[in-house]
Length: 498
Image 1 (tube, one colour):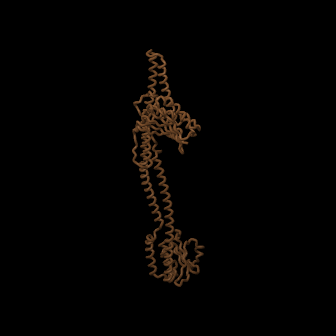
Image 2: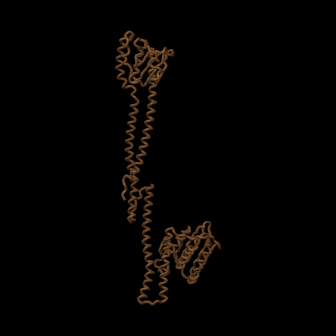
Image 3: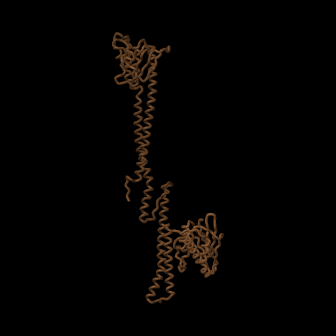
């Protein structure tokens, strides 16, 4: 089955990681831009404060050294040209004596008041009191750090509209002209706008973010491809297993969750392979077990039809015996099938377990006598009341006693002991028979398994008895274990919960 690449895990992981990176980069960019903008505003504020302080110092020094306000205008326009500000100075009487963007005196040669020109002075963002050397207030310095375009600083040569009030010497006029040219050039070099720095930083941040995003996306695609590779291997292996190829294994080359998944998958394939092998063997065993009695029955019937044998009681008994064996085999298979599907229903009732064990044991007295076998039931209590299915418990005990009879020689010993523990009841069926080889112990409960392959089927066993015993014990919530020493005997220990 082909997967649409757009819906593949690699694409989904890549898109998810890309979104995460984009959100992180965007958040970082917004935060950085905001922080930078705030930092630049703070720096700009401090720079303006320093500029204002320098402007105040310059004007103070100029005021102390120069003889009239028109010469102070020279210093104010230097400041305005350098910083792009509007600088205004009014005196104690409230008259404007210096204005870097407008002539201080009108056409009549009179000074305007601050209120007449600026009203409440809202356009100015900084105000400094100006004092002389004696610490006497002589006026206020107003600074507009962001003047309108039509409020550009006057050229120094533009100041002096009235000939009659011109007292500036030719030397000062020459200095003014040279200063205009000098400050036109210098204004481009002093205190570059911080906005340029901010824009440059933001451009760098955007470029770095895009580059980091591209590099991150490439790395994500590589990593997701590497992460998805084991999953693709699992998918391909699953397809092969679905086609019946159980020999394929996945390389286990990592110790993470995917590596653990590969190990579990390989274990699953091994279990499937083993299960398939068991199934094949089981099918062959069932076919063999069914074929033997059916062949005997068919043989007797055909011989009877051909007149080779007569309808004698012995012949009928043989056919009946084979039919019973066949019926028992089918019934055992039915019980195993129900137990394997977890559909085995138990009719549990509270009863005396000791009494059930003794009754089942007494059913075999004749067989014990036939082989001169000594057998007894030993219990530490006369009555043990627990909840169980008496029919299934009898079936368990009967199978184990029957198995012990088969493998115990004449004049042997078969004993059953019952012990009441704190949390469970233990029933042990032991004999001093032929025992079981150590290599066969772990397979003794497998279906159709026979430890002694040379033993013929004349005993009536189907090879399913111990498998049924194990399933029935587990259905009661218990467990069964076996201990055996070859040529010394075998012991089956059943543990049932209280």
